Length: 156
Image (cartoon, rainbow, N blue to C red):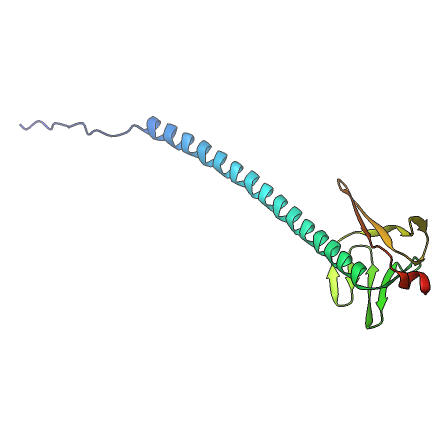
């Protein structure tokens, strides 16, 4: 009679494989958690960068126009800032969530807080400085734009 011999193969046991699977699941779970946190941080940074870019574009446009136009008027009823000179004019309309300048739209929540003429706060009319504010949940941002008056302002 022949005896059947079983040779033992070198292999992992079921319990060893289960331990490796559990450790792998934990590592993958941690990796996805960290990835989620990194993505949320990147989205927050991207949103802040976009908002800052829009605010800086608005500030730059106001500075350029304040020094380009000789007459600046503000109407508190419509919340419109109109800038004029001999060759033309432009205006800024301040709405709840955006500011419109001719055909440009700045999606920023800046509002006209105060307007000034010769250092005195006024309600409306000819101005030489404007203070804009932006308030939100965690935001309290201010923007101040002014110009030096020339003789033409006082003659008119």
